[in-house]
Image (cartoon, rainbow over all chains, first blue to last red; front, side):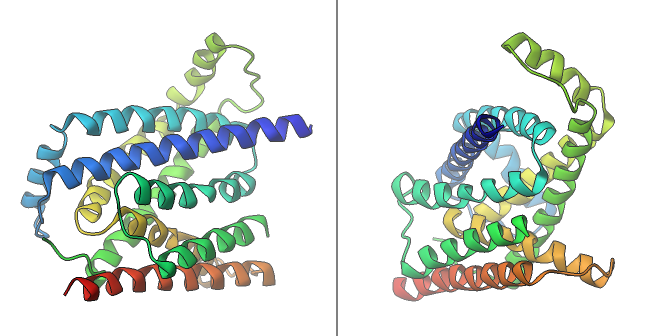
Amino acid sequence: MSTGIIFILFLIVLTSLCDTISQIFLKSAINYLNVAISPSIKKILQFIFQLVQVPRLWVGFLFSCLSLCIWLFVLSKADLNFAFSADSMHYIFIALASRLILKEKIGLKRCLGTLFIVAGIILVSLS
Amino acid sequence: MFKKRITIKILLFLVFSDVLETFTQFCFKKSALTASGFEIRNISEVFIFLQGPLSSWFLWVGLLSVLLTFIIWSTILSKIDLSVAVPIASFSYILVPLVSIIFLHEKITITRWVGIFFILIGVIFVSLSSKERELNVR
């Protein structure tokens, strides 16, 4: 039974990682375009049209497909509460990856805030 | 450069993308349930497993909602940092319990209240960190 839980946990880490990688690719593609869009439907669609022509977006898309497949499998096995509380480590991966790869400046406040959110999600999901 | 500050508009976008995300998760769970109790022992059985969810229309509604979420999410990311957008998107963990209190009259345990409070503090901290950065730039 415990090996089953460890296996599920490993799969959840894997989806979190794939998801993080796909988010990093998406954000990097958007940073590459470097456009400020105004809130009109036409401008947003134009922006999306430009965005889908950036190759690295599709690398991210592949990772998010992979993540979706693993996540579907996890959901068929595990309890949604458990799956979501374990998935909260995703926030830590995102913070680390944004710092290391996208060079976003993460100060003390953002760090503390992220940790609070992770703790909060674990409490909400497990109760 | 464009603004990095969180505005009410961006917050509303984030909440909307959260609601869609929740709806997507609901659809995926429904589609995955069509294959519950299925044992996967090797790679070829993964494809047999996927036949269940693929034939359920919940999966396709879910995928449509993924597409819409993608458009909204890209719009948000063009305005703010990834390490700000993702934590603030955790707002749905507060919204869902609130909705269940107000509309479904569910009782919320103390642990859950503490959790909601923690998330709220976290979201406020992360939002403040984004504002602070813009002030530093000036």
